[in-house]
Length: 413
Image (cartoon, rainbow, N blue to C red):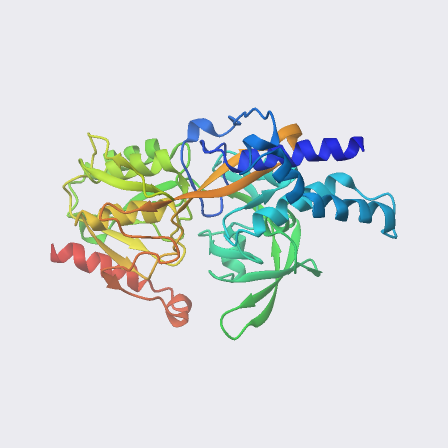
């Protein structure tokens, strides 16, 4: 019965952690908004004294509640054909099932390997195919290929679901785990089977991995003396790079500025507020709303470099999380028009809580992000002021009608 006692302690600790609110300890480079980059590796510690402190009711209630669980545990150990069973895997599976039962695509369990991968800093280089992906659904899904990446060259598109990797069926495989098979050393090949679109077209891609170097900010002057800045992710160095680019471009006294947030899948909350503050001089730029309706407001940081220059923001279906917070604030303040298509719709807050004994972490939705006008982003996205799609023919012809519209709007101003 010692194993029962040990597992009961683990289950109790897990329940306690689920009910604890705190700060993120990390996040994924796949479309998440991470509250504070200074907490990337600062695990939350909790104490656990008895089951009564972690669940409604007393210890006897909890024991009664979990009686069927332990009956099933014993039956597996007594009757399952392949013995011995892996107790650790069974424990991890139980946690996963508990998280899945909540029915929230962004709440879940990460095993130790997945958690290590998920809490990597948002570096500006890595080895892989060069695509931002969503791990919250049934399959690993492309949010957007990175510009100039092997994924873009191969023809991957937003919304492509990866259903096989190197011939292995990904049905039932946690997308966070599937992601590990897509990453790999440069100059190696990964074979992806993709399901695309409403017609569920099946396509095969052989993609050679590469070292992906992608500065989070790039800028240049366009024709007609228009400045252009693209932000690909909200990482550690994004704010500094943005300021540097703005300082250089503003020396040209441009007629206006185009901020390109297309295919930007997210990043740190701190960075998002800093980026917004370069374009909005003051005021509340975002709200965090918890389940009980309580709100926390975030205000612009004074001293932005581009708070008055005519501005247009580009967004698309690959703009998610932090980029939606940025675009939503700019739109609500009337600071600029949005051009493109409806954004991804990732506006919920997840609390990442590491579990005891390095057994991974749980990810729990604890709040929603709202724009300054209290607009809901999650599962809705932002609708641009000017809806301008890009067709397959545009892509083949090398045309960018969204950028063309932004230039037109700047010249009109």
